[in-house]
Length: 255
Ligand SMILES: NC(=O)C1=CN([C@@H]2O[C@H](COP(=O)(O)OP(=O)(O)OC[C@H]3O[C@@H](n4cnc5c(N)ncnc54)[C@H](O)[C@@H]3O)[C@@H](O)[C@H]2O)C=CC1
Ligand SMILES: C[C@]12CCC(=O)C=C1CC[C@@H]1[C@@H]2[C@@H](O)C[C@@]2(C)[C@H]1CC[C@]2(O)C(=O)C=O
Image (cartoon, rainbow, N blue to C red):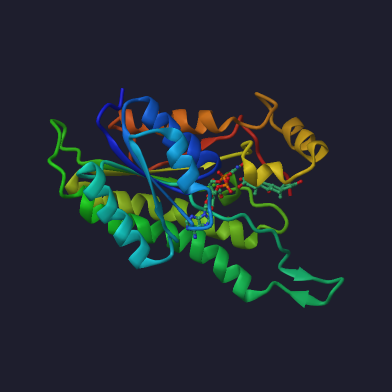
């Protein structure tokens, strides 16, 4: 039970973020869904009931994140848990020899900006607010959970930017956990394999079936709910800190 807990979920309008928001609500928490103004965040918040609100946020913009944190305080009184799910998936080869074209540097920078810097931007600003909480009996004030990818470890062809952005999240997890340890704030990263979200549903069913066949067990895409269950376990278990946890059916991506 996470009754009374206040969560902020970036990328909460869709996929893994939305499933996380639903799970926190189901367990008795309140949630601020943060997503792009162009997302379905406002409709999703209405659909999910009264303990949820939407804040239009670009995670790379300091002002947006600061005002979302203020909304959390105004609506729910405080912040206990942040789940960073906002992210973009890009696929471009380092050099396209057919077109004689190198990877566009702006596109590389954008992937790093949203996935890595956006995640850090939310962490650095949210930590100040979570740090104001009264510590529990164990000295804990809150938890920050990030979303990397198994591409951080087994990046495929075309994933130089995406893998670098996700490996950056994995790399900063331990130092941030150490930075925030004195305040009793835990920092944990989840590295998902293949999950059935709108990001994946753009692919034809045949391509999805091929991807599923590559997963040793269970040989299918993960359900977003399964990601949300891991978020719940991390919140509930105070000994999990400074670590990246894979959730991938033991998939190791081929080149
Ligand atoms: N679906 C999958 O198989 C996997 C997903 N991931 C990661 O999980 C996270 C969630 O992905 P999905 O739910 O699958 O994708 P999704 O596309 O369904 O959801 C991502 C959400 O992030 C939001 N977003 C994008 N840029 C943003 C920004 N600058 N500021 C605020 N919000 C922004 C989008 O509007 C969207 O609602 C991403 O970080 C993704 O890289 C990692 C591994 C596997
Ligand atoms: C690039 C992939 C795999 C091959 C394919 O047929 C279609 C794709 C588009 C979506 C990609 C696929 C794969 O690389 C894994 C990721 C990057 C997927 C989007 C999220 C993804 O599941 C991930 O982050 C895995 O770690």
